[in-house]
Image (tube, rainbow, N blue to C red; front, side, top):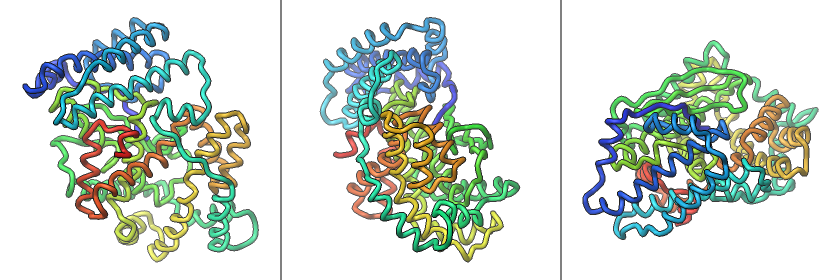
Length: 435
């Protein structure tokens, strides 16, 4: 998951980027820039009513201060958002510049999502799928218990023995926990591997970096707090046991080529090079999150195709963790099956958020169909309480991003990297992934 603290680009630097637009697009962009500024200020205003909403901000500090001072009523925010959306609808981006067209669609779609969030904060109730569509520009497919049970039947055969399958799965995984005293060494090695592979294919700006911290008492397993100036703070939650597969997963997802690289490239290519101030703010409950989470999850496979990942685990990470490297294939064969249960979380959240089941039943659903240990299931329900339909951004986001990139790359590994880099350097949103 990506969440960012409020870093700042200095006013002089931001002013310089705002003047970096091409001459041919200058007249049109001047109005777009005004609307983009209005959008940023609206996001900051909504953030005064929802502590989770502003996930990142590194624009002019006086805009944030003004939002904090004014604490505008939701009705005023909705009124001005409607006016901004109407003015934006009158704009016609010039033909011949794909990014300008994407910019217009981005602002239009993000504003629509913002207005939906304002309505929810004002008391409007949406069911799970309506919330998904309104906030994230996408809706996840439904899946039945029978679909998950077919995967569970395969796991039953792979993990035979007495007792519930969930208990057998947890007993199997117990041999693959990273000892706490080895976490640093394992994550350092995983991050180095992810960065080295990413840097082969994506030009990263000088000075980009992040700091890694271990934290507790969170509803998530990892988080990227992007701070601007090509810097992130990445936090790993150690409330629960950290299994060996999470090293590459989190190093790629939160770092390279995931959230950190995504934010760095948006800052470099859109904020600094083009002066598009709308990308100095990131509203969490918005279509942008599906792209952010989807690319972060798909980026794991881009950086580490299955065979290469297994070799890296065997040669580097299992030894760093003090685990038996001869069991890499065994562990990842099981992990591949369990990954096919990823949509279980969506079904639990859908039922829970729609009021069909309570929190205890949602946790039990996760234990039964996703093979979550009780503590992990409880943590995931806490996540649903805090973030609602956001859960679709991980699995649906990954699937949409993967289909888009593969359609354009044609299975060629080098083109896959190029298409992936192009996507995370642009303001393309979920509905645009079908193009």
